[in-house]
Amino acid sequence: MRKNIVFKGLKISMICLASISLFSCGGVAEETSKGSAEENVFSVSEVLEMVAKENDVTRTLYTKAIVGKGKAQGMKFDEDWRKDDVEAGPLPALFLRGVATSITKSPVPLGLYLGSDFPVNAANKFVGKQADLFDKIKADQKPQFFYDEDQKLHTAMFADVAGAGACVSCHNGHAQSPKTDWKLGDVMGATTWQYPKDSLTYKETVAVLNSYAKGTVDIYLEYLDEIENFKESEKPVVGKKWPAEGKYLPTVEVFLDSVRKLTSYETMKKLVASN
Image (cartoon, rainbow, N blue to C red; front, side, top):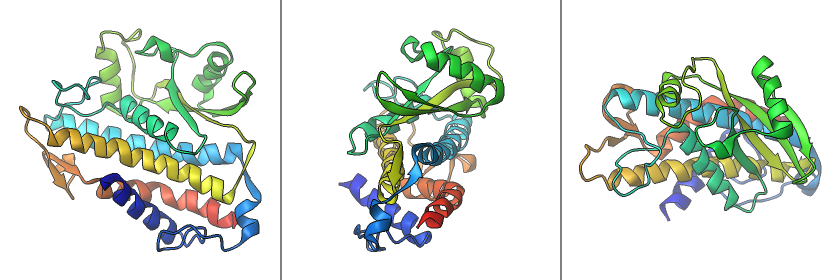
């Protein structure tokens, strides 16, 4: 119930601030123009670039402001954070996995995963065409788009760059890491997005963006719920403050409000321009 309430508020704030008419400010979907809702107005590449940008900003904020600053305050983050005997939060890669898991449970046919040529988990190693395209991404950090014939899915790969010390130190110190000399600025992997159609309607595009936003809500709330169950560790105070100010964590509303301020302008500008 709490997830539904929080996400409903998030969706309303995103849409209303951009003056987008696909959704009313009361949170009820309504088509102000049947043509604008049903006509394919975005290529799949455009949509995947939009959602990838949202993801890039969200993950950077989580990695730097929550994990990086949180560790400095003594907070713990662990790959086994869901285990009953581990009192910690999700590492950045597991935060992304949580978002991806939420998306798979939604009706939106959007795929998301993170791969690398030196992954901690061997199952995430790029092979075949993706391995070849990843070599290009490492060279120039430009996204790569292709149609996956085996899966019948339009696919986009975006550079996952080591932008925070927390990423570098974690991978370099991990017992299963095949590479231990990562540096800030290195391309550590690529986020891969997939969608079955080559173009999307305005309504489908908003649904893709909302499915990602809901995934962010789900995994962050799961983290806050984990903290509530801490028995041995000191619990951060959850409210309006961030780890940079002490042993604090922002509420999901405060966290996502910061995400929205960083991402919504460019994304919403594209949506409004098409309407």
